[in-house]
Length: 285
Image (cartoon, rainbow, N blue to C red; front, side, top):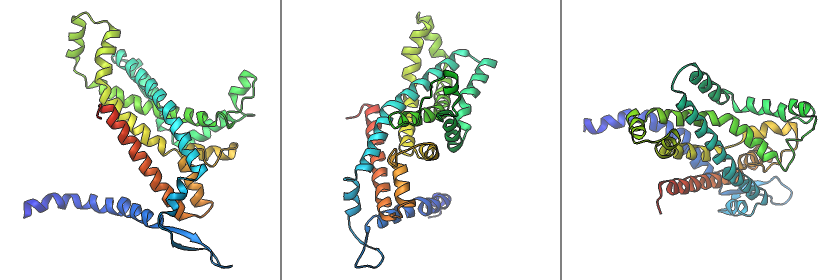
């Protein structure tokens, strides 16, 4: 009995924290999402049981559906581009084979990740400002980087600048774990540097690329700080991302029940999309 109880003794602190800070909030959000505000007569609106009414509203809410469409488009373009740049930088660092240049560029590429997302949003907000941007002053053309037709990609630029270095370090670490004997055997067989990269390094990077892609998908669904920080600098639609719309629904409109339902729908959407991507990356049917 003591042997059986020992693992649970060590697991208890984690399980208590997990239950308090994950299971309980999710359970309360599920409970809260089942209520709707209803007004009777001239009195204040009251929370009454509404069943799945909030979920039905979510799937017919044009603003929420537009935010999902925005983030889906963001995923299709920004994430592959970011991972392509991160992979390229990791391969370049791996080819430097030590020395000052490798240490310098490794630190330089990683530095943007150390900047908090709110600070990064403020920095890029200054660069995007139509009247203050040094880019506009140098080129002489006052480009509005916060215009509605390019706003999503301006946010994508901030996210790419911030997270490319993080993904690059992950991929670079994976390359460092590859035994040098594999490279030597490939060169003995007459493989050029390009062939070593294409047929040895890239296939061995696939697990790390899958991991970074999954993290990027989950992180993309959580984008909030960048558009929120840019709101005072220009017109940023409420539904630019799902999290922005969810936050405004709760904090500005005070509709906690509907916000809880949106959070549950967004979590399920993220889970399904991540699971589908993972199965596709593994080649499962």
